[in-house]
Amino acid sequence: MVHVLAPASTTANSTCDNDVTVWRFRYFPARWQKLAYGSGILPNLRRNPLLWLQVPFFVLAMSIALLRLLIKVRPHLIHAHWVLPQGLIAVLTGFLMRIPAVVSIHGADAFALRRGPLSLLKRLCLKCSAAWTANTHATAEAITCGHSLPPPHIIPMGVDTERFGSGSRDYLRIDIGSNEIIILYVGRLVEKKGVDDLIKAYALLPAELREKTYVWIIGRGDCETQLRALSVELEVDNHIRFWGEVPNDQLPDYYAAADLFVGPSVEAASGDTEGQGVVFIEAFAAGLCVIATRVGGIPEVVNDGQTGNLVPPRSPTELAAAIQRLLSDNTLREQLARNARETASRRYAWPRIAAEFADLYRQVISKS
Image (cartoon, rainbow, N blue to C red; front, side):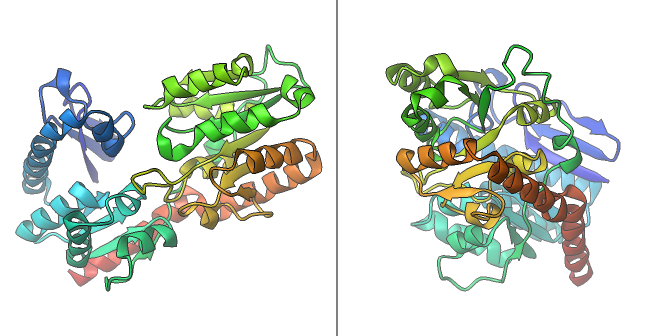
């Protein structure tokens, strides 16, 4: 039996689906809870500094909710995702209840806030955990920063490869000609995703290629207004469609409908960048060729020339050249896509990832 503790969005109702129960805690009056979800906690705080007032209530509410849950269900192990504050809370409450805690690092918690007391607190949390995992070696190195810590377990996040490989190509292309090309982006519209570079790169494509190519942008975030304005400024808005948020179960059809996936991630001013990039693996599973950038942990996922193409970040000119090269070479694009799909099935399918975590759980429980 798995119990999941998560912040509430609007309601604090718990749900139960087979062997998984989700418990939601409220940390502020429902109408004002704006800290979690959306663009993410750190981007939300940067956008609205007044949300810092909710942080103490968030930490306190999570701590109380976790302690109550531990008393209620007495689990064998706690698995916290993100080092602060979740990991720290899990380690402290686990110590009180004599329950081992595993902490998983995803990216923003490693690449951002790498200086000052918070960085010390992150490393202290990992030292006191029963074990810690990172989705890539780059993520692990960003949080250790040369300091001595227990060795991490490198376990990436996976995807449902069967579901993402079963999308319908025709469903969303009913009104699109068979020769028309779709470039797809999926993700939050925040600084570190570099979506402005995709729009600039598209504007640099030759006019004849641009005429038969469309850019689909899926997601929402703080940068949406600026991105829409940029597409108008560069006079390409008639070929760029902002789809907003799309339910996860519908994403396979969007991947299937596209001809090329572009994820132009960058390092944000805060130092935050991509730890792994699950969307690249979703594209892999859908058999979609990928262009990405050499930042964070992405080069550990996208093998340049094998499962996709890598370009330098913040280089719309090189990104445009890569897009043009792949769209004009169907043989190369299809070969990279086949390699990517095989990689997704072999390395990132959920059964394999789940088995790696289960093996880690057994090790931790047996030692405790």
